[in-house]
Structure formats: structure tokens, C-alpha cells
Amino acid sequence: MTTLQTVFEKARADRRAALVGYLPAGFPTKDGAIAAATAMVEAGCDVIEIGLPYSDPLMDGPTIQDAVHRALVNGTRIADVMRTVEGVAKSGAAVLVMTYWNPIDRYGAERFARDLANAGGTGTITPDLTPEEAGPWREVSAASGIDTVFLVAPSSPDERIQAVAECCTGFVYAASLMGVTGARTSVGAAAEGLVKRCRAQTDLPVCVGLGVGTGAQAAEVAGYADGVIVGSAFIRRLLDAPDEASGLSAVRELASELAAGVRA
Image 1 (tube, one colour):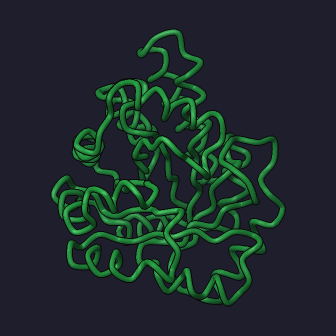
Image 2: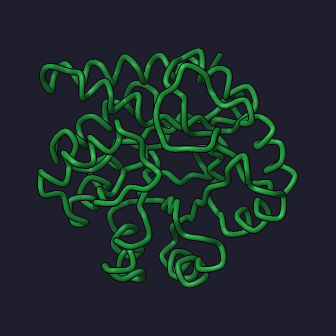
């Protein structure tokens, strides 16, 4: 299994940022999600976040909401998420699950962590789980050998950044701006300052997400962050594709562009 530590050490040795791609399980189909994520890895993604489809995605913008809705219509369940993780892990990438807390809580935290580890997953991102409530999840995650990733935002005071960073073991997810996910014409101006403030609190890698969708933006963020996270731009390529083959070609093309960007 490829771990996050291995990914970031290799990227650092190559003098570049890591490229992190996101897709929800079950989109565009259950098997199509595995094929698309694998294509992204083959074209240059180092880490894949598999989204767990949820009916109340508070952080997600319209593009991801559309994809998640389709995944739910496709009948995607947690078992399908684990199967997606297992399929994508075979590509050699480090694979995380990005999920809101409620599905883990209902499934059973210890069971979820164990099943994710058995599927070859290397960690989770839980955007709505606060440091004050994260203790039990951190314990069962550590027992199963999976990393925990939490989010900070430009509005986070330094004390909050420290508290969040102390809960992270894989990397710190720095949201480039306030608001929901989605590709934008420019990356939030506060992102670089947020990365600097994170590094004052932790030695963990700091990855920037929200708003990145082009190779030029990836190159910009790679100039100051350890990782570049891209989600909506990949999903948009799949949504706009007339068929699955075209969608795979489109995400390969974007991953190649972004991979060149983080190496620039």
C-alpha cells in the first residue's frame, strides 16, 4: 500500500508538489469511478480522494453536488466506496476517503476504519469533524493504521490552526478560500498566507484545495504548498463528456496538464 508519507517524501525528493485528485464513488458509474480515478493516476495524480456520496454535502459546490446526486441515484453505498478504494489502490496511488462524519458514525467508526484499511485505503478527510470531537475517531484510525486529515480556512485563527494540525497525521488540508468547492478563475489570495501560518504550527505537509482547475493554477499553488488538490475540474470533464470513453480521455488530459503544473 502506498502511504501518504511515501508520496510526500517522493514529491519532496523530486522538488515538486504532490497532485491530489478527487472523485466521488459511484460517479459516473460504480465501475466508471474506478476507471476514471485510475486514469487520473496513470496521467500523474499521486493521491486520490474518493468521496463518499452523502445527501447533505454542506461543503460541496454545484459541480460536486451534481456528481454526488448521480452517485446516490446509482445506488452507491459504503460497500461500493470500499470497493472503489480497493480498485484505485491497485493503481499505486495513495487513496483516501473524503466523507462527512454522519456516515462514519452510522456505520460504526471502528468498523469503518478497519474496512478502509483492509481495502487498501491510507486515510480519511472529514471536513465537518471538529478537533474537540475528533478524539475517538483519531484513536480508531491510529489503531487501524490510517491517517486523519482535517481542514483549516483563511478565517482560522492561529490557535485554531494549531488545534486542527494536532489532529492531523497525513497532511493539513488548507482551503484556499471561504465558501464551497468549485473551479474558479483564480486561486484565493489568502491561500499562500494560510500555508505559511500552518507551517508555523506543524511539520506535516500542507495541501491546498478549492479553486484549482488548470495547470497554471496548479503551478502557482505548487510554488508554496506541498500538495495541490483538484476535484470539481475533473468532475466537470466527466459531466461534459458525451460518453465514458470521452470522459476518461478528458480526465487523463487534465491530469497530465496539472501534473506538468506541479512540476513547473
